[in-house]
View (cartoon, rainbow, N blue to C red):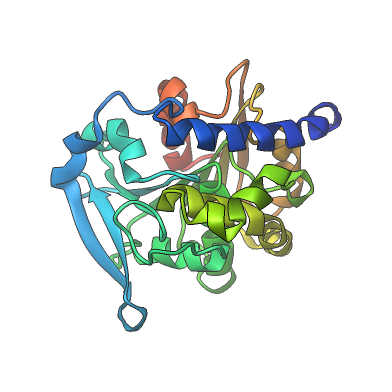
Length: 289
């Protein structure tokens, strides 16, 4: 794993540049790969869930038709929305109840502005936990990874066993690999920022605030007791595969840790590696390590 760290640390600025270019492409309709199913195909699954009525915060959730069994909560990256998980909602893994949320600041969720703290984002996910003691698997893609890790760490410190397993999919957890590209400062400049769609404004705000959030999270990661499955592509230029070595070293308290490296795969694993993602969910629910 140190070989990965040495080779890929130098690609992080390039990855951030590619991310910025990806934002530009999305703005002109050339978005990265997505689900086979259209977003409209999942609208009948949509519900609104209040998080903090006093603050007027409400999250929009796509809730699979299967309402029994262990609960799988899918957390998108940045930018993104619950519809990114359409293929998994319309054909849920057998025996699972599947939820996907529009994270605060995205899709149909409130608030309108960005929620740049992992704690604030994790609070929205926590509102979706079942209250009947069923097993819960949290799956976070990209920036969704540190969000589910933050929730698991905070819960395991006070309610060990509340989260059954985590699936960290192309997850960005190593603060040393986070950089800010000069283009991001330009995008954050008010005259430019105000011209951008909400999703792109908020995505940039999240990314610019991420490094100190990850530094704080790093101290909490050993608190996680849940089973953890790490899935990462070796050709991920947006979230370097060097994150894997950091996660393996930091998740020292996990009940067990499984790592799956997908050769020659990039960042868009939910859509180009669906079989591997479904297999990781199956592994997460296996009682044995």
